[in-house]
Image 1: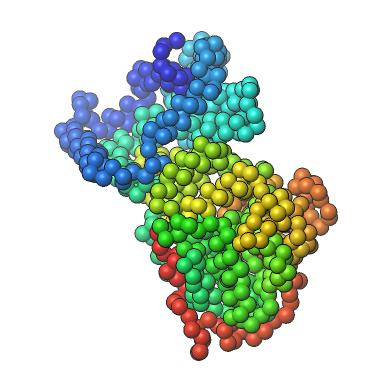
Image 2 (image 1 turned 180 degrees about the vertical axis):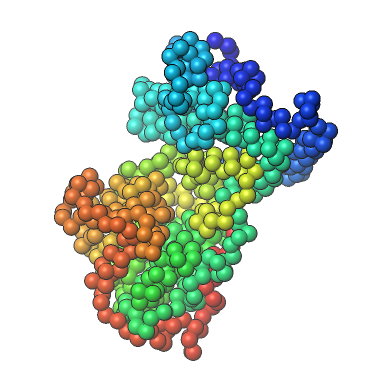
Length: 625
């Protein structure tokens, strides 16, 4: 065994050395760039030299910018931080043990013999009797035929998949770990193994190598442009941001801003029906993201669909935090919800509203309802709907890996001006699905040099918002870490003790079957704390697609259970599956709560004669960074 620092390096070194000896089948591709005598043509030599010069010049320019502005690189983009994480992980894993490395090497050599035997090479060559190559491990990152067309690349990716399996198994077998430590190690292992994929390295990726030969390196120049642009903005790009304009092709539903505070704007949407439900609907989206996830475009918009069903819809548009919000805490968001509810009631002269809370705003809505019940003002909310919202954080999923004291302190250190840069949260959520939301784009946009797609959902995902630092610390500590919201009167918000057991408001709860941010099992827990009538619906897909699933798409499905299940497992066992969107189920439920209608006139039409409004939807706040 050589002295390289870890088995990933050890195992890749052999395949890398084999590549020179085994590249013959690819020489035909390279011959296209050569003259008849096999020498690189003067034109191609010049082009390759120009590519090298461009890459060097771009990198030197970037380094010069960093030297002149050392604060330009955001803290969480600091490579030293991630290197320290990897070092700490390596020291905790059995990989550091010599006997474990020996066992891995021996098993790895057996794997090599099996793989090479598929190509008629090595000790098992005689066992090959024609037919297609059948490799023992499959993964969609290596689905391209080029990963199997040559034994060197087959060895590389099969070795990687083997090692990833083994280190994941080591986490499960590791001694002296409590459940939280094991889960943290499991998460870190997944992040590191995803980063170590040979698909992410140009000299180990045959697809990238072929593209580089075909374009004579132009893909690397374009990829470097993408990389440096992202490094300058401190955020990974997923889409072509120039393809979208607020109010033109996203957030297009017609409406007016009818009220605003330093924390939020209130949008009222224009009716499209002659009559509307008497009780209006107010939507509280999460301030971690922009509200227009519920109004992406006319075909996907939950807002437009609800308006077309005859609902008077109000939307809260939260302000992205800045230094002026350094003292904002959770109490302020609860007060804002109550203020918005009261404003809608007063504006339309109605006794109550229907309310929707999405994700963190749903968690907050639960506290708001508890406070209204404590104050004997629960009649202000006729019904409450929760989109993928948690109140009990015991099983809150992978985000629990970010709430120990050390990480809370690190996050606090990233908020010197009283707010947390939204790019940190974006990076955190991307890390939960690293292969799909990080490394896929590294390969496509940095290595292959592909153009960014014009995809509205990905544009929204990258349109980050800043968070008040005090609120963020309070939320992670009190809810995620200490799970105090479900302890009766353990939290006091706006000078009022919070007891979820007091809530008897009719409630509709939607969870996503594949949600990795608010796991369905965690969302289910709300059924164990509220005391009123409750309908739980499990939707197909995850945190976003499970919510934004219009009936016209014909996608996914949802499950209902009209019995009395005591757990999510019991709910699943007795659930009835329904094809398509759950939205029609929700609107039927909403009408059951309040079937009265009124003419869509007067202030039901925002901006009509005599109605003072502030500006057109989507408003200023959603456009601020």
